Image (cartoon, rainbow, N blue to C red; front, side, top):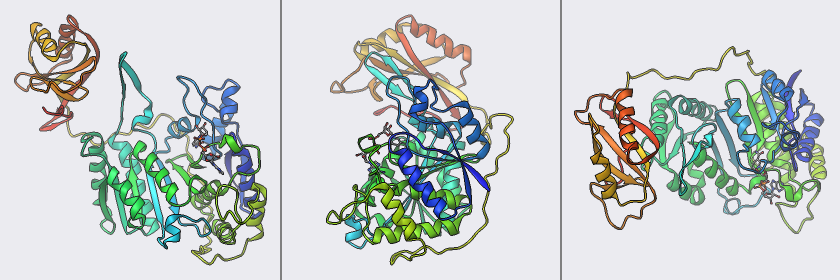
Length: 484
Ligand code: NAI
């Protein structure tokens, strides 16, 4: 029998996980469960990543983790157990499906507008690297990583999923009109992969427009792929469209390890009261069952859940308030009692298929993801981020005083807006400038050259950070300042 790892989590986690496993067992789902120690309670015992070494070993050897929500320990420098798990095991795609559930009233269900949207969110990169620094006492920066191989993994997964789903449309949500290099790269990879799927209509929408369209015409969309932070926000918006967090499942898919969990958190306000709604975790469980090929078991339970919802049985967080709500236990018992019943709306077809065990192979070293190089970059300049509370002209004069060879000062910006050589006195300043030096004749700079530039500037200012200006042929790997 296929064995999977189960982490019950914190707060309502143990209650809803027990409810779901009881339903699975009643349906004779052919899975064995190895319960592992993971969550805030493990963190409190002194395990800084929120899991015991045995838990990590079990998950890495089984390849599938079914997890309850976990509390993020409070305090500076402490990372979320959930984010650590997703990143450590490279579960690069976060799939969240949002479907109209009859019995769960929403504005759209009342208007007869069906929703069936799948959001695929990149799960590792973006600002979730949590690489943040204070450059001065007033200025904080967060590094946003968007990589070509990371984008490729998640977008390729989204296209494959769209194909399997029989989707007509796949959409890339982005903000490349503003973040031309990072979101621009994500979008570029999207259209490169789209060429391999001519049968799918592939298009893109700016993320703010996407949000507006999702709340006005959600039935326009089918599969949407986004970067991490934008995907996080858009998927919670979609949860709201179908009735809230109690109905939002999620799968974190990787090449070796996959994690299935509900979108919601530990709901500390209702923990231990036997009133939590187990539906989102159960829906996540269907994703798990289908992932390992147990489609018949998944369909049997899903039909029972839909029938139960249609018949008006509900926990306290949703449903018709004129019908008394039931406990978590009673809700799961009602689902079990409805095995074999067909819902009136969207019944699932019971198509048996083979149990598919995850392919786990022992990795000898960390996989290096690298795309085909387009040649070496030429370093044509350097951005130096300096601390100063002086006026731009004073900063420029001081910089021009220093004898810096091979390069010229081309622009100074403050919070991304050019303030020298041209600018506006109406631009508010903070005590940190970016000073861009470019090679005089466009030729490449060596490490020694860029270090010499930095040393020259350090005579006058504290240099907080530096960034090289790379160019591949005509393609610049850096943005211009606003107004440059
Ligand atoms: P939350 O999702 O736990 O709760 C928000 C609201 O929704 C609360 O009123 C709660 O009672 C309700 N709710 C959530 N799930 C419910 C369910 N199944 N049945 C009925 N009502 C439900 O979000 P919150 O309060 O922001 O976070 C609490 C903790 O959970 C934090 O420590 C957070 O870091 C963690 N968290 C963990 C996640 C995970 O493990 N994947 C995801 C989100 C938050």
